[in-house]
Length: 487
Image (cartoon, rainbow, N blue to C red; front, side, top):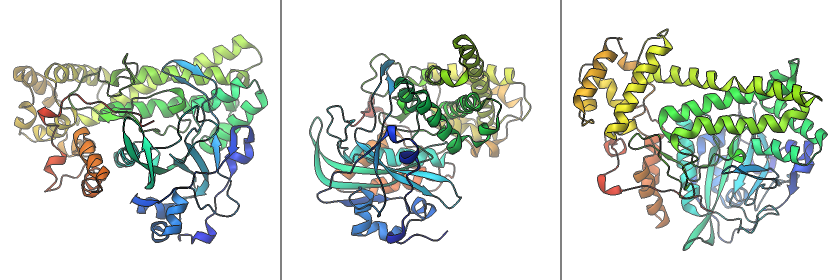
């Protein structure tokens, strides 16, 4: 696919055109002194955008929304959401804009979206801005998730604006240019339902079907098929999170996508020591979104989606509820199957092994990991060496070495495949201490550590000399870790 010169960038406005009730035309605030911090050149090329032009002054202005192509109609999207269990009927893009949609090299429609571009009518008292640190965090973590094969929004660029942002202190401001299959959320459907306009709800659901589940349009009950598709996508997604130790941190319904992509890398992090009760978010004081709660929370969010779609299932309320319940019942077995399949691969076990055997072995292992506060990523990577006959790297992570030995004897009897394990157990993830180190350096104008971290996590399964520190657990003096939303 050839890259487009700036004069021919084609930004479609399908969302704004088809759902004007949910799209408020708006413009980004002008950035005083925009400066490109990081550009995802492979993604730019995939979108048909010229990386060289994006690095130039006009391209940088485009990436912060100051300079948009003729005919483009940036909009702030309306949506609702349950935030920590409390329903808010009108949230929306308080500091974000959908510039439009582009067709990528594979013919897929992709949203081009800005975060931190200034106040909108949905700002709810916020300043509409974003700081450099949180936007670079989203860039690193979303690209790491993509490299791990986990469906995700992606960062095209982070641009410093030259405008300070007041949080606990004054911080340098930034805009993130983000790419997604769409920004449709459970909260989008909740918003349409809350308006009481069933035809708007129907148009939104049909838009979602066309965008993400075209096969549902041919189903006997298209809107039920849409719900079933979202249930399947989210069951697969959260299983993948659990298998790599990812903690999202703010799993509100407005952060649960219809596409099944991970969105909103605010107070997110990866597990160090394995503990299902782990919470990294500074605002999650009750542990609602703890690592171990994530499957339950996703199922709860999907129930809210089903509630919002009820008028499209049947005119009879009881029948509509029965249909929704039946669709939601697919979540647990689909999640369990995805998790079991993934855990079997992490342990290098053969295809066709009984799920009950895998589950029992995995549960006993996770109990040992939790009791020993063993580093999650390091253990699974070192288990590949154990499958080759060198048990020491894995065994030495435990205090209860006899417990590990007994478990490992059961595991080895099943004939684990070390090479297969290395293909699914990463060496490198965005370890929390390394992310903080890179963000601190970037705040002082040094992007070198950020680039080195990106190099490591962009090929997470390929062990490379010179990157040993990127595979090592956090030092003991790193202490307890907390992350913040950045708003």
